[in-house]
Image (tube, one colour):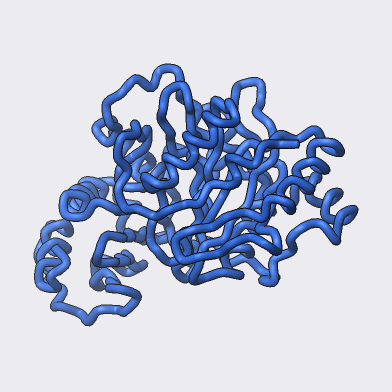
Length: 345
């Protein structure tokens, strides 16, 4: 029987992470900026990270879709569950099965607590029948706009790991705006640290889920939502370096490499103004977007015809009017003046 101390944590949401060495980029862009500009070393806090450098998690696409469906079941309160799998010979966590919430789980605005009996029953079966290990937990921050561990998350993780004498443990945090997303963080107790991990996504369903769910229909949690609605997941290769460039639609402004310098001016200015900034590629048309999730929440999309047309800016999910898109060059100057007119910068 696995100790329940780790799954018993009651997560409290706080917007700051204090007292913990966070080995991750402050903005949450995690990979998109590396592909655009190369790795930005100054985005990493100081600290000894030599003994804790694994930054990938392997998972089947079907398991990410399962998390999405669970989050969609509870769009305005927290939900969560547990992660089962193992570590590869190179110490990369491999998630084979995602457990959802039990019927007696507690779902609140800023807290989720797993159903202990449900967890223990499923854990025993997964260990006995498939030799899997309990390697992590997951929970959603629903629409709170917090896509990284809070101070409460980190404290709960480290306390649970210390009680159960676990050196490494995963935490997946999900969010939902129009679509769901999920980000993984690997915690290290010896280093009192955690780091963001990139996804290595395998196509299809986990073979464990196909067998386990068929055999234990009366034990598992089946989400009420039938279809996932996920943001585009950026998958990286298991070994070797990640893809070195992004592919944009024909005629898109960022196909002109000289415009990367313009984008960098825009990115640096936004990051100097706001602390919680992330970058994404639109699944529908493969264009770039910027998400700002501070007290004011903005979503900035660079459409296919940009810079011939202005960026599309949403404030708290409401599209803002055109402030008067100029024609002067360079692009970064035009963009920044436009945002100043709209009191965004």
